[in-house]
Image 1 (cartoon, one colour):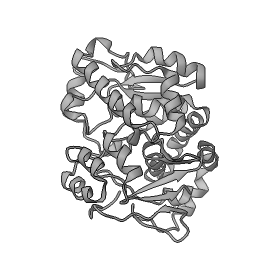
Image 2 (image 1 turned 90 degrees about the horizontal axis):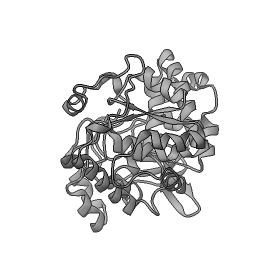
Image 3 (image 1 turned 90 degrees about the vertical axis):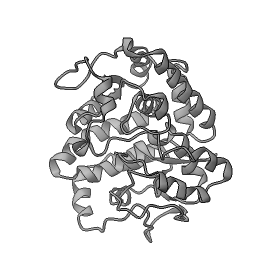
Length: 332
């Protein structure tokens, strides 16, 4: 989880960014919201408790009917602001598959979308559906949803003063950030396979290792295309500041995707990423992970764990980061 916004770390990065980008970051924490990888240690924020007051959810799978009556005019205005802002900057930055999925879903630009309307399109395209949940849910429940082609989406939206940072994923991060790529058959299959592998990893005691795969692909992945490097990770496409930083800053490393290398690499939860891993295609991502991970987990036990900013001699290097603004605190 990105549970702490470290303003000083963000300000330290500004000297490394073009002035036009830096000006957008002076009031912007690192990313749009926290993400899913530390559920066991997560303390439910006050906003989650407040937003869900008076609502119940299923005791087994944590789902609830999307409470449309809870969305205020202010909520819809906040959605519209976030949607317009990201859609203005993502063309030429986000990958074609994301932009096509957003268009095919016909995501509402003016108000929080109706989940069931989106589900009709998702089910027809890839057999996925989205389900409303109160917020973060336990690991085993999350994996079970993914394994059954259900994506849990927090139903509520951040408040206007939280446009640039939120401690916990909200409906904008979950829906705008994640759902468009579920229209892509290959990525949709990859995410289902991740869910299927999640419980096995938990049973074997390697969930922190598998969490790195989610972090560096589903949340913060880049893809190399004939038109140049593009974004596909939800933590980036839903964030104004990281959408700029990940492609335009000299600070981070950009390295070619290699499964075992990625799975032994720590990551940052409190600042921009020190390293982004770049896939060649979603098929490459699916093929690399369509294997039995048990031998991989055993092999990783004999390999050194790398820091978030480390460069390995075997890496395919697109860019060696300048390291300007990197936090000195420990990586996860």
